[in-house]
Amino acid sequence: MAPGIGLMKRRVEKENDAIALAISGVMKNYNVKEEEIKTLETKYDDDAGDWYVALGFIDKKVIIKMDSVQGTISEIKEI
Image (tube, rainbow, N blue to C red):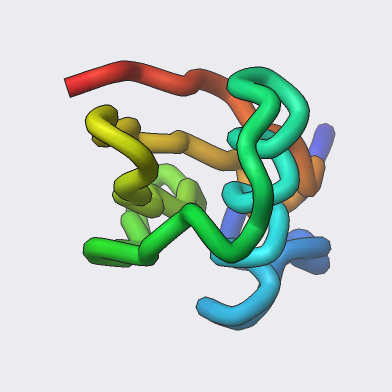
């Protein structure tokens, strides 16, 4: 039996780690420079163990959902 999310070691532990992963995902998917990206908001979901980071760049805004245990981006949604 696998341990619950609260017992597992997270790869994305801090807010700064989540922001860095989100920015790198946006740079890769949208071909923008790091200087053009602004962090709008961050949130951690304790129940699911997911980070949500809202970023703005050029004329777009995106929300990036990340799995903190796996250290991967689960979803990028334009708003």
